[in-house]
Image (cartoon, rainbow, N blue to C red; front, side, top):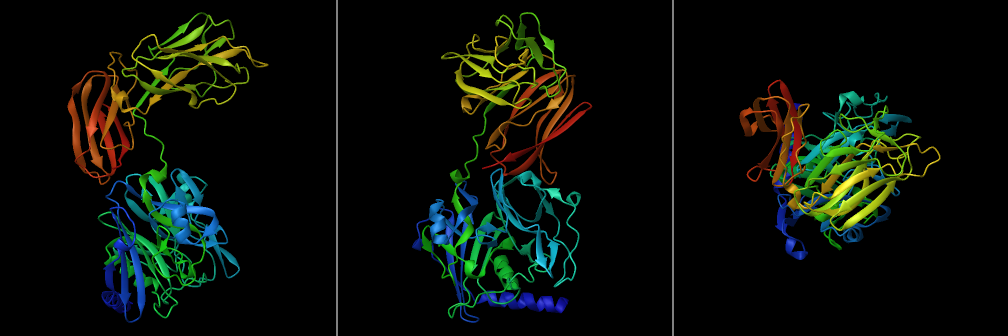
Length: 548
């Protein structure tokens, strides 16, 4: 077997060595960071093309797209405003049989099983993903639900053999690992390259019986990435006099010789297409209309939510909150924010209210959120009174609904003026069983960079906590905050994903209190890092993402 494998590697390398590559980027209108190459070989005759995307260019992203209407790729790419792209994963009709993941949303899933020998075979298949930190993965995945958080990755696909007569049990969720940090991605099969080596998991991903051949020469499409964070999208023309196509092992070797450390196969045959804008790059054998594509496009296409620059939460137990008037008492219901129970007051004339002093350090636009504990005896028009820079607004909320979540009250401009506050009044009237109004917590968020100033506090905290850095993901700096209820020697360090120490931010004796430090990551590469705090008997770690 070793001799056979050695022969295969030598043969495919020799075949690849005969491909003459020519850059053809100038034939198309493309931004910096995207190049297109054409390759030709005389025997076996082949025409092959690849897009090289330099993902070190912060303006570029890889983005899959799915549509309810099948389209040829030279129509699909301009429709979504992408620069260039290739066809996506496997499909039937307008349904994708391969995963398509958008930011925070699974648009399609890899098939959980396939039918062979009149039986249902559970299967784990391949996936190419871009992470929030702009790094890439090729993983074997399985979906245990409809959300991104339900995608699990496995160290290997299922150990099927060619034409295995009986199916294996479905993969056990506990045997996998949650796929963290995933931003977007697309499914396919089989894996071609792992860790820089040919690793065609054709049998394991049950490609036998699918119509996708193993080593026969056919049109092929694949995607992979290099160690220096370039993405390679490749198509090989086939089933033509001018180009026979390639087999999967040969395609894997071509990807390796282009520098790929990991790669997967996408749908091929009549689906194999590449376009730059509305121009076809290759000569498809059929130009089949497809429901999914994989593209390189501008980063704005991801439509990621804005990253908050400031967040402040005031609970009813905090010194910034005052309960005015009589009749306040703690609710017995669970679901309150923080360590202080929600406070109730009978519906009345407005003489009782919770007053939240904002104490903001910068004039900016802020979103105001409320948190309350719902119950059937709550008021359905509880007044939230917002005294802001431009006046006073009253927003009435139904506290029977939307309990124990942050509910947006409104967006307002606030300044440093201490008279600007938020009030929750007991002057409610509506609701057939309206007995009480609830005051629990408010939250202010701003996306304005001027709000990154942090006010000091002389209050001794009741408990230890390392807060999530803010913003996260970040570029190039972020704020790290923590509180310690006791004086101690405190050490705050940053580590990379391999456990290597990146820097020490704090290493000194500190009294009890609240602390914040700015971490400037200008001199380190994008990726996942960990904040580790040791303060006496207290230890805590948080994950943060540097996204350039």
